[in-house]
Length: 299
Image (tube, rainbow, N blue to C red; front, top):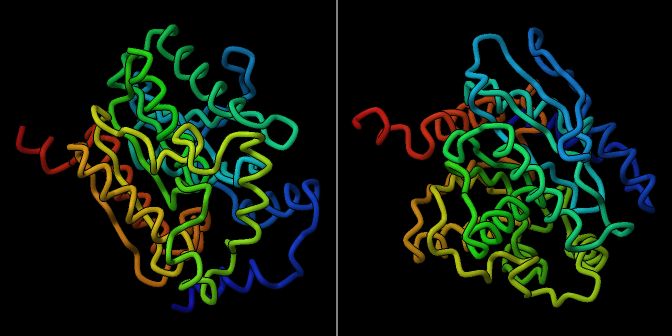
């Protein structure tokens, strides 16, 4: 508990930022408070004209890639803020990670982020990566975007990734989960009013329960295996629990991990948080096996 309390202190030590510029600066300040582990090589790039960054740990399989979609409520977050999380996840999965700097709302509302994610996925295929060798994942809004990407690919009859990883996913932009209020007193990051503002900025004129922006309401049949990770102290706990249930009901192989006492997107602080490192190790094993590690071990 001492480690997570230290992260809470980092997040609550100053007044909440106001306005998009301040919020974007703050997420880079607190989420990038710890550097990535030594030995990981970083290379800025563009993919189909979209800014991105490769990270590669020693000995990883360069023929496989994690397409990482950062969180930040579709309105903030960046390669910088999520560099440690993306690179550690790639290292844990034994593959290169490609962190995507998709366009942000309100300057670029829906469908800009989804278009960028789909464009990057298509570009990886064009570069010669096999669909099964591309895995997609992200935290918070990045988790919702991961699901939206897969649903859009399936609906268009296009290739799907080998599997997906949703960390503290935001999949209901109508904020109807019971934990939105039940966990409000223990979540230091995410609160209803803040999410409602982010939701309106991203959606533009799209309804909050439209499955294109709230994949909780999408037809989820035919998707590849999905790992859902969430902390018990999150207002978004019910987003994770409900999407795992709906994936399972749609016959999608799914694993739900609820991590006691953990806060929203806790693997961001894995350098100082043992539970963050353990969560990334679990996600890495899942991604490495393109689904369930125990199934791969016995295949």
